[in-house]
Length: 163
Image (tube, rainbow, N blue to C red):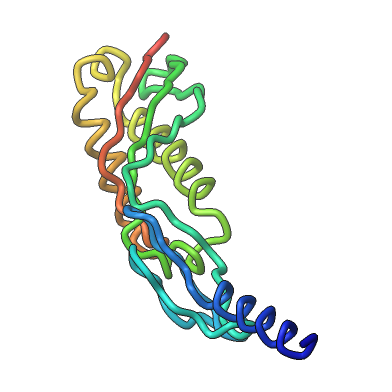
């Protein structure tokens, strides 16, 4: 009787470890013995117990990211406090997992440096008039680099410009 009970318990453990249900708008990255194996799509998925493991879980929805406020210097040497929001989406879960150690920090830092560069080319008066152009240039620069990180930058919005 006790051997049958042990076999049933082991079978239940194997079944629970092998069945994974991935929620809608999510993707899970599976490693087999420490190496990338597959990306699980939403729905019912089966893994090899004790060999496969879910290493990363990514949401595929649009993610708003607050870019911290920073001081930028315009072409006419005026200091300008700039605050913005970046919207992005994970498009390649495998690259998002292995492309950068932390793609959120990388995107934030790249947004800040790109914004400083773009605003540094404009005079103070133009920065208020050319918000859409500034937003577009920031998105274009970040999106080019973010392809290697498995991320698509959807848009950037300047929240506040304070001289």
